[in-house]
Amino acid sequence: MKYLFYIIISIFIVSACNRPVAKFAIDKSGSLNAPAKVKFINKSKKADKYLWEFGDGDTSNLVNPEHKYLMSGNYTIELTAKKGKKQGKKQEKLHIKAPEKCLVLIQTPYGDMLAELYDQTPKHRDNFTKLADEGFYDGLLFHRVIKGFMIQGGDPKSKNAKKNTRLGSGG
Image (cartoon, rainbow, N blue to C red; front, side, top):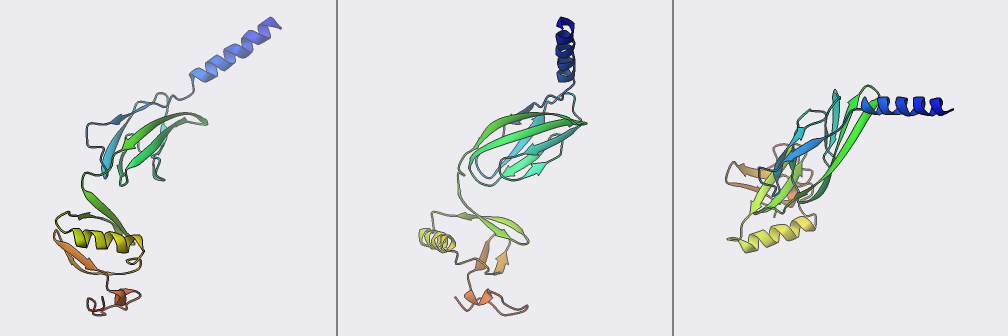
């Protein structure tokens, strides 16, 4: 009976030693103010596949991924290191600070945009924020885009507008 116990313990130790060990570091040399591009350095052992969960719903299978956090807040990053059916997991907390500038995330079917709001135009800034909070811009088209200068939207006639409809005079 004593020998059976030692055999079971030995098997457990040997199998535990073969399990992948998940380990990583977060490169904090860049800005951690939103929007923040964060690099993750994989230091795992005995693994050949990886699953990163960034705490905001996004994932990656890359060995050393980069991830962009658009919003400030606290995130739990989890790395799962795998080899065959065995795996190891490691979690770490990450705090992304509020942006230094007033930024607005505009999500569209064609991609996301970050717009900066300025203190020099407080009425425009406050009105835009109020209308966005109320959902006014939901479904509206941006009908005038000048790269590096401005975007113009908010014409209620742009909701469900047909192609080539002249916009910009309804709001």
